[in-house]
Image: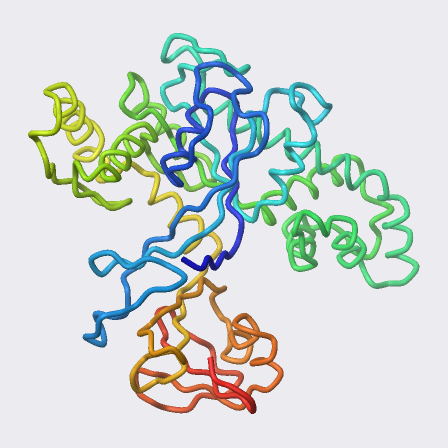
Length: 407
């Protein structure tokens, strides 16, 4: 299968919260999973999927997916996920595995923070009695670690950046974007952070230390949106802490990464019928399973699926891409009448793209030559021509007409 990646999703958190289990459940990658800190030494990278309804049923055709999967009318679009080593307090100063992993975190476009909602893991990532630790403290801790690390990056050149901005009267957005280019921070992020803080963009040299900290903290929130995974929901005290986590300013999803991993491995062995994100499963071969295995599956159904409607893992990936990053799916074809590419494959590809993208911009995503030679596009649903500035909609099927070739 040809892979078509979009933005990068980073799975973060302190050690021993189920972070690597979440990653394995999302990607079925084999990683070290153990009950002690720093099991993950190097970042693990894998492929997860955004789950969306496939458009082939709208057109009453059978599709031939190439860069994605289609299972029972559900299109699974591949995305890249990275599992970052557990962060401990004062990592921004180099403690634990330190700055190299904060650097990896900040390269992600959206962060999934896996929190032990049961409160059974202390601030260092060591097991404790469920309910002894406050999971809200873990959220504040990670916020501070990332903010302090970003402050260190910006502070090195802040005097020069602020003086130059005042002298040139062009603001701090451009030089800050250049300084933080490796972290994917854009001028729009900088300008939005300044606006939210109510700071004088024309006089950054007059900002106080508190102003500077507040600005960078807001810049972190703007440029690195975060989703909280309330993991281990089958354990005592998790439900109470879930409600407390929902009082924070982040989206919160109840989850059981262990349950998802068990279901996906059972499905992989064709013991059950289950797709990532399903609300239930069907046992296919009870004769091949032990009484204990069937009891474990029924426990997942009772404690997780019946209560929370899903394990939370697929919901987290979909929320990250479709809501937080505001991405949509677009299907390019060459022949808008038969919905095929040049090889005759029906609806072979689907792309995750930013909401608000125009037909011409989408042509460049497919291939730079298509963008350079763009003439017009055709909406396969109504066979109408659309111009270069036409804004595409979710689940559009589009044919790009160029001077040299079609998409």
